Length: 428
Image (cartoon, rainbow, N blue to C red; front, side, top):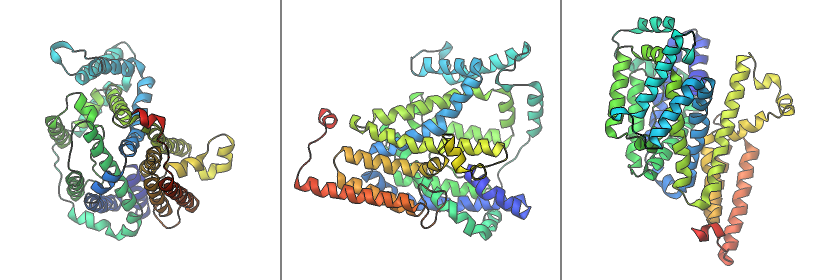
């Protein structure tokens, strides 16, 4: 969402002076990504088959820590009277087995308690959760009945910017493909096996339908399947969620709910999901692969750190280049390192964890293959880079290729002279 808004839609809207042009470019961006997902659906099963589970779920664990868990955790402690209390309500039920009055779901109890604290506090002059009567009154202005209308012409209107769009649409299409594949693996680790090709193809088809109806944001195979399953979510939960989103959107009710319910009462649910995704990475993989999972977290944390720095500098009306990378490094902020390590983070996590897991298993030839693929992806900017292109991070690409050569040498040596299995693996 950030990429299509700030890299595609906003610059084109600003350049042309026409927001419709920016929106059309966003629709074309999704159009291209949809076909990347559909095509990738036929390749993904083979990638999934040869990639260690620690790499697939470890990459998701990194996403869960950096981009799912941290913000709700920060929100909770910025408004602890609501956030921390609601979090405790959820944990007591979903981890502790506590049943609330008449079997009311814990999520609904947390929302009700959070709303009660927010509005009750307002009566006594406390502003918990940012609630106000003015915001509530203004939210009713959006009431009405609006249904999606076809936007075929607008989708193809964005093709005049295709050269600009392809620079990010293809790599982010691959990024979404990998994340979707990881989420299918996460669901399988949680006890539910889904056909990878069918799931990813459906993801692309639904995204295509969305863009043809005017949606400039790619859809996704949703993260956190084991978490939703653990709190009782089944196929009916997904269907009901879709129906409710349609109803709330059609009638303009979303703004009213956002003004009525404090977001900080809902945020703990995301933290819970993040906790389960992270825990699953360690619970559903061999113990010996734990170091590989830890390594998979690092690129995602780097990407999050860079995003925070960029947002902070942007709010101050400047950027890292203007401030100076050397000056930032002098204060301990290794911005360029975050930039390189966090570029294409989910692919970086997958490759690094794959190399490490294969080394732990003493399958050095396979590890060399992952390193070689990492070198190629890096050279063309799919990881450790900000954009697709030739020679985006050549030194990092060369480093991966040297690692591949070293690991290939280890594989040759192990064939002639078997290497003893590590203690951790022998224990398993």
